Length: 68
Image (tube, rainbow, N blue to C red; front, top):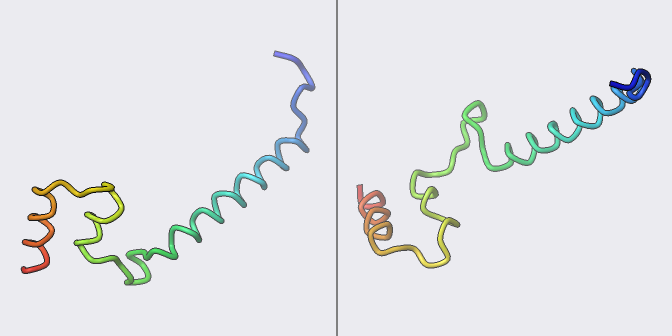
């Protein structure tokens, strides 16, 4: 280990940068809903944006879910 290779200032700057990145990612994720806000996607949303062409068995399962 090199002594002085990492300064306290570098540590603090990196920590602040990472906290900002995590905060921005959290805000982006919360745009899609959170349990705390009470806004949640419907259960059928778990079938969306997964496959380019949804397999038939999943299409049937989604239909069953939507029909209740």
